[in-house]
Image: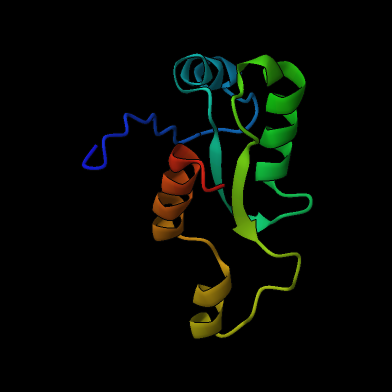
Length: 104
């Protein structure tokens, strides 16, 4: 809110069943979606949620879904290297800012 944005933050507690009603309610208000997912871009939870939103709620979107996830590569074993590839909360803040300002 410091930047003048009023966002919804949804922390999904379960993926099955997916709480699509909560996502739809948020999209009706914000018309944008940014997904933070620790898995890879292909085949991850974020890809599935993005697909469902695109298939069922496309008309509510004013911009493409912004997915923040790892590149399609193996996760490094060393924790210091893992921190460089796994997306974190700070990446979400940047991603939401870019989405709200039209940079993404």
